[in-house]
Image (cartoon, rainbow, N blue to C red; front, side):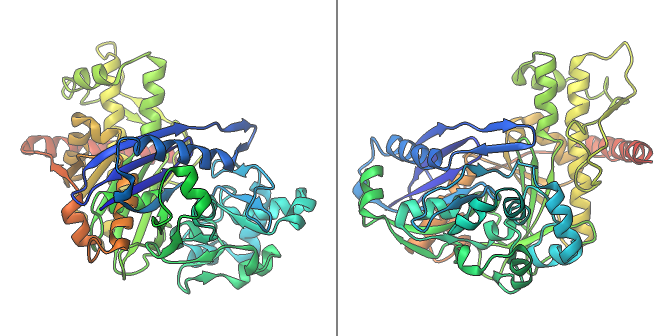
Length: 482
């Protein structure tokens, strides 16, 4: 039996066909556009469906589709659209990057209480989540607000397209900031403040629950059978945690994209003074705890662009620069100092630069700076009871042996790198496989389907080097903050 993992992201959709051993047999991908103007960042929801059709057809063109048993999804979160009673879009998608509703987010925070909202949803109030967007529509596009039958996001739109059922999961629901992670229901206090009823929101089902079979229309569009089942998916980072095998208490994902995301698996909802975001994991009885570093992969991407560099060359040359860059520090806040500092107005800095340094010394110091930021985040998980000893790395930095080693020596953690880079798709495929009964649970599924390499980190002198350099880095951060 084969399964499809479908990842509906911010700029494109990927599909992979996976067998019971976790081998990716084939894949497909199509990009789509974002429209950005000022603080508005929107897209067309129909592009998600068109890209899914292309990606699945591409992935299955050399596959016997009779062998495909199920699909599940990984999706971007908090990208909202208004739909009519048939589920057809009445508006463009207001994406998770759209900041038009700052005033409404501030009013929401005052009315319900910042800490109360965090305890309910697991997330602090912000204009990029959906409660503030609904308030904005209510104030600025009243006719659209009144006309809207249902306010939905990416997962529900795709479930509607696939099997005609308007269903969301708890991880996506929490990031809409109307869902109570302790009760597992839409929150009455928040809905009353927003002025909407529960029937204007989707049905909530657990990750991995059966949503239904493909409709005749969707099966025809995708080139599949109506026997194919659709199991409820999840927010992309929760899918990535499944796809790298982080399904048991204490497991820790480090997803290294433009933003780096740390997601730990816990036995209970983890609320912290630093506002790590707790949520409900796919593995029964387990929870997630998530924190993001906004100035991470984005910092190296920025640096590469200004020097017109090449990642492979930067990697090989920076590998030679540990000693020459030992007194060079880069604080990588090109997008502000996000978690755990929560100082979005603060910008990056460079210390210790002299005429003996070159572009590759700076590249190394920048990689180190991001690794130091990751260590500071992990320390907050440890302070709140998690034993952080292993990191399962995915994404761009995981493809760099140098950067992976730096992270390992800085954090003191064992580093596992995934053989298959598309962990969001793999996590969705694993959800489909468990749903079909191919495995009894996610732990058994991970043992069969997740392939990873443990990085060798034998040099204890590097651990001591980075312990001392991290202390100096932390001192510089505190001085800059003050």
